[in-house]
Image 1 (cartoon, one colour):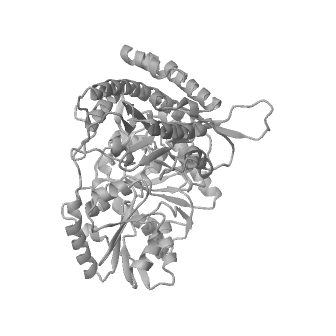
Image 2 (cartoon, rainbow, N blue to C red):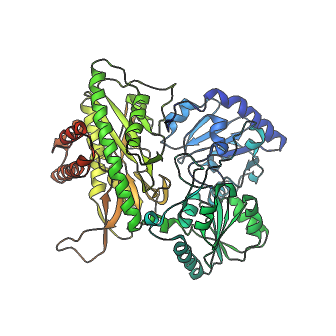
Image 3 (tube, rainbow, N blue to C red):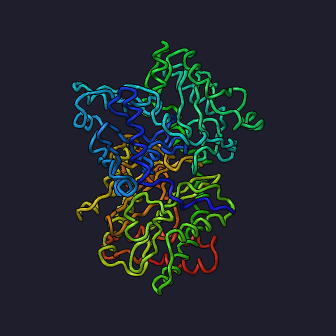
Length: 605
């Protein structure tokens, strides 16, 4: 069977300079002083098809977030703290690494460009993005100008658009019929006085219609646009070749299928007011509505919150997927320990060996549909590259007395998983144990938390960082992201992040993943998925409604990296109870050797 994950580098730093020169020629031909190239596609999803990966094609940088502003004499590659090490390694010196979001693009343009016209493709940017840049340039003689995409003009060997087949997502896993979902969301539109909503996020459309697809690697979504009307009918704009007769019957009479080329004409014929999501819809959508006199109103994607609130059937499937995945992880972690002993004895085991082994253990269940993302496997200093993807060129052997970070997940028909474990290869030393324990204490604090309804992810994010902050340490990513139900492993709008003001609600699934990264030395991350649930009652507590987290992930946390003396009583009790639950739930699902290893790995501390 063909492996799911490959290890060939898809870009090189050398590709950047000649492509940058070609883009500058195209800019000059259009009379532009600059051009913005984002990671996003027209659907504004985090993950893009090969034909839409313009940022990687131009720069060599393959991270999942960022953008470049190209001027005649400068090119600023804007990346956040997750990707700065990676960006430096993947790009030529022609690209300046700009620390974003600390440095805003509008402010950078004010400093870098005295005057001129900067082009952008309105299909690849949201209204929010462009408005913020324009606000920063309000009193500066630099104008943003919508133009046809210049990268598409010079990209001669651009891949074809994806043609993955779509499929039905069964009712027993969805927990609610698509007709009921359409009616429910349509009622919300009517209450808001809106006649229709434009949907551009593929995972929202797939959730609403109970379909799944194969257009984006690791994400079972169909690339499509849709218009949901206030009577519950949906006009779906997608390649008809992806939908067989059975799936068209599944869509039902209330859903009409149209060519993607019909999307813009359909917008022009809508009766308003029409809801458009300012933060996720391409600016081109609102521009088209405004240009043709269709009344439009800004409003959130009406599917995002309902999709985030998993129903009982979805949660049941997610729990089942995590038990299956936990068994695979136990087999894998047992295997890693045997390999660690071999490494200490002089055997060579590489990061690619580890990734292949983990995929094999997941496949052994017979129920793995795909990985949920490319496995991150960083040995020693590679663990400090937050979203490191091993290639044949970077493949590193596991070294004695160092850390190994493995962040991975599976796509199963009943749920999506995401788990990170950091393990010891020998004895990495007291400093690594002290830092690992701080990360663990933050993860435990979030796991044990109770909070009143209305609290957002920004409030909880700091709790995970507290033990690290006391030691003068931190990490440059959010503490957690939302996760879909056999959908995208990164799902909005819920997050555990200092940037998130979305209140957490029962049914939401998120990751809980504090970490610490020392460039050139090691990386540490511990990640479980959690579901928001009503908090169990407490004797003598106020009547205030409270929420809590249910842990979904069950796999041992490396006890050899824990300093028990740094844990307080409650933290030690949580860890021991968690490991007891791992033994109970996962022990019966694994082989005899893995079961014996599991009993030792989950012994009380």
